[in-house]
Amino acid sequence: MLKNKHLYFLLTIFIIFSAFRSDMPAYQLYNQKGKRTNFKKLLKEASKADIVFFGELHNNPISHWLQLELTQALHAIHGNQLILGAEMIETDNQEALNYYLQDKIDADSLKSTARLWANFKTDYKPLVDLAKENKLDFIGTNVPRRYASMVFKGGFEVLDTLPQNDKNWIAPLPIDYDPNLPSYLEMMEMMGGMSNHSSENFPKAQAIKDATMAWKIAENWNKGQFFIHYNGSFHSDDYEGIVWYLKRLKPEAVIVTITTIETAELQRRLDEEQRFVADFTIAVPETMTKTY
Image (spheres, rainbow, N blue to C red):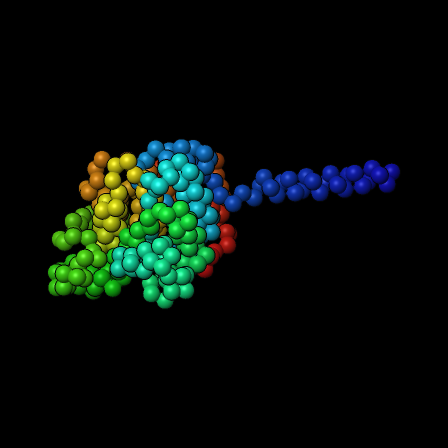
């Protein structure tokens, strides 16, 4: 009798822990149509592209973990033809980044000479170190933030007043800009409580980032190479932002986009408004812990 009770107890514990393993997934992948898919299929499609945009939520640990896993898998396929790039490194910090990649400075020196994000050590350094260990290029693509701030205050026109040395860090002027892109219209609506001047310049400040990131990708990618770019999902969602600019610079490039969302429940299929935002969507429980 005692033996039977012991077996029943162990069986109950096993069932409970099995339920936790199956009922508490950390994420779910979906394809463009919102149907469930898996990492193997993501890797298969991503590896056939020329350029992959990994749209993250900046403080989401699942985004950062999958970035590293996907990049490692792509490196196994593409070898030294793989190029890494990121919004999180600004164009005028490229020299410092290169020194680190070439082992000319250490991590502390990189931190003191480049404007690194607060979560660089936990979230982006593993990617930079992957490039360093495998002698891969890592490109800082984002416009220096001071220029985005200038555009927010004074529009694109203020960039014309910069000395040529400063313009070297920015996409070539004049900036091609479509204020009617849905993502930029949405940004203007978000700023509805501010003056017309500020609401009009807010998406322009976003556009100078998008245009510069596209320009740096185009400048460093050639057919036959593979580029993976890490950016906030809003920079590549709906195939706008960086993607819109890059298609004008490199129309021949095959592009795959990934986005990340938080959701209350990992459903069998994405809601209709969440479909066709990207080629692949990573859905993460909204209760997931944050990196900062």
